[in-house]
Image (cartoon, rainbow, N blue to C red):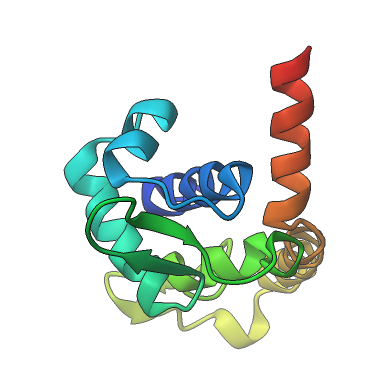
Length: 140
């Protein structure tokens, strides 16, 4: 089971890189190199982040990408939803059909409780907090 997809992981890493850079526009090439994200993959992710309102771009000399808002207001849970949809640990699907036992499944009710806890924890984590941690780690 994967809780985070590669798209989400790359998006969070790109947002951290932009946050560390502050008000400076950063090129996709620079983000790609610093975060070791495949360049073509990153370009698509950056377009999704722009559409999602988290990043803005500027063309030309001195252009690139930067955060649209304050990093402490960008929740990791929102980035997950942008790239993966709602946070779910189990889809209760079998061969593309909803499981017939779903309404009576005791495991599902336990999974829903775990999902609620996971969502609550991701709601607490912001890009700003991750930036702070990244800066502290780089100083050590």
